[in-house]
Each structure stands twice: as C-alpha cells, then as structure tokens.
Length: 118
Image (cartoon, rainbow, N blue to C red):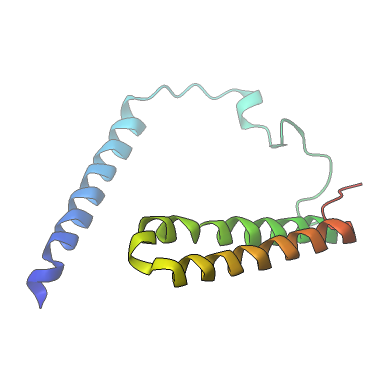
C-alpha cells in the first residue's frame, strides 16, 4: 500500500526542498533597498486613512461570497469536460441542470441588485 503513495511523497519532498532553496537564494541574492515609500502602509495604491480594525460594509462581504459561489461552481466544469465521454448523456444533462440552477441564481442576484456596489 505504501508503494502507491511513494511517488507522491517523493514529489512533495522534492518540491519543498526546491521551493526552500529558491526562497533562500531569493532572500540572499535579491536586492534589499528599503525606503520610506516601501515601508509605508497602503491600501490599493493609496495611503491608509483609517484604522485596520474598522468594519467593512456588509456589501463587501456579499460581493465576496457571491464571487466565491459562482467562481467555485465554475470549477466543476473542468473535471466534467475531461470525463464527458465517460459520463455520457446522463452526465451531460445533469451538468445542464446544474448550469441552469447557476444561471437562475445569477439572474436572481442580478435582479435583486446584489451585484451593484453603489
């Protein structure tokens, strides 16, 4: 049973070692010229004007949740597309039903104004 997982273990170890080596080389060989502009805090390209602990507007969370929902659901299309020949017409129509539910949900959110930031 262990021999089935040995290639994965070797891949992880080699990846961690290679990543660690590149991280250390970048730290020691990369330029390090700090100045006041690089050390100053900023948000999205402009200076921070409030405390970091200020609550965000609830619309920010709503947009973030909607993005996560619709973006992650689209990720289900990739394995489906790879296995489309194997799943046949039943799998095709199941994905069309899934897509229809996504479209209905998207239209509902659009009509409710959840995607408006104003």
